[in-house]
Image 1: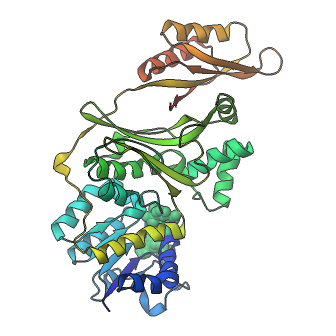
Image 2 (image 1 turned 120 degrees about the vertical axis):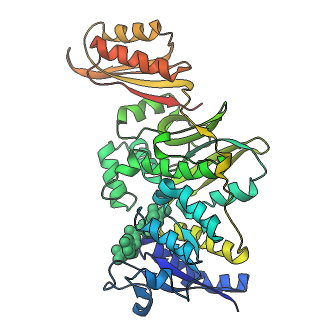
Image 3 (image 1 turned 180 degrees about the vertical axis):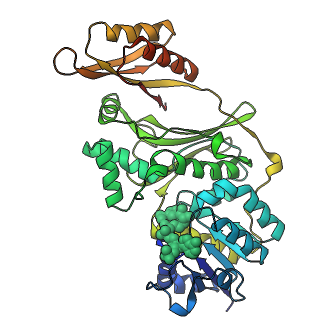
Length: 422
Ligand SMILES: NC(=O)c1ccc[n+]([C@@H]2O[C@H](COP(=O)([O-])OP(=O)(O)OC[C@H]3O[C@@H](n4cnc5c(N)ncnc54)[C@H](OP(=O)(O)O)[C@@H]3O)[C@@H](O)[C@H]2O)c1
């Protein structure tokens, strides 16, 4: 029976999950494929720790894995930019196929790595790097290949979604919800990249590169995190029939591609409304297929390892398989100021006339209000919030009017503005 021999770089959460999955499902896979997939070598930083593999297979020397004769596929599961990037390039140069789950290195050096893959004639699979267990890239690059996908909206970061879900369902404040995510192993000790939109932006880069065949830089993505969201925003959104979700949006606008990551008010009736906790979902709109929804676990040891193994099986079945990639077809990426309804929260002092000042400034800029609530607690002079939902208006108008209102001294802190996804 033929065999594919794996050299794994990294035996952490996902690497150990891959070893587990092969142990549990290897026999079944062997039977279904008439082909064996087995691990022969693994690279770690610390080879004194007990591992799921015999110590004879574990090394701290990358050459013993990357350039080994008994390795056909190098599976990069270390994370980070360097040395992951150099190791992937070395593996392709040594004639190995590569599978990686590393969105950070792909988002930063994807074009270089894909070009190296094409030049070496060896494939690089990276299904696990976007939305963990959801086989999304394969669906886009195979099943939907004949369709012209012009828009994507998704929840790509499970940590942010978990934090906002707990704030909504359990009434937690932001800091307590983040601490709970850390306790459950859903957030790193430093959760910054998850909550400030960077992780979702990395995944959006990869999705956009595959969907729109274009090279995208991190600085071309408009990014807003969820750090400024307070319980009052969650409660007010809820009272109007909305739930706040961390969304990523990619759409063709005129001749360009607009890419952004930000929290938004999503109606309960929208398909993304019920997507809670660490779950991810991606809604694609294609010219031929209309709307297609993908939903599942975006991270975790076994879901992510399952996507890694899916790529390896793809290589077994189709050794010449490549992710379609043609940088020559590049579309311009630019932020196109859009229009939407907005949710605005103005932190105000409880003083006569302040609400009137805000409403007048909005009116002078042609922004009309559909709903408004003021919660001003305590004696006169106490602080509170004025929350407003607007009719459709444009992003530049909202930016102008918020800046004007701040200058009037009517607010005690900058206003929060969130788009409403209708
Ligand atoms: N965890 C998830 O749910 C998830 C989901 C989707 C994608 N991913 C991606 O999958 C990749 C792996 O994530 P993970 O959560 O499994 O990471 P992890 O638990 O931190 O494991 C990293 C592994 O790589 C090894 N390693 C790191 N740097 C190394 C170096 N310079 N030389 C040799 N070995 C090195 C570590 O060795 P030691 O054990 O000796 O420290 C460890 O075994 C990342 O790119 C991540 O973004 C993860």
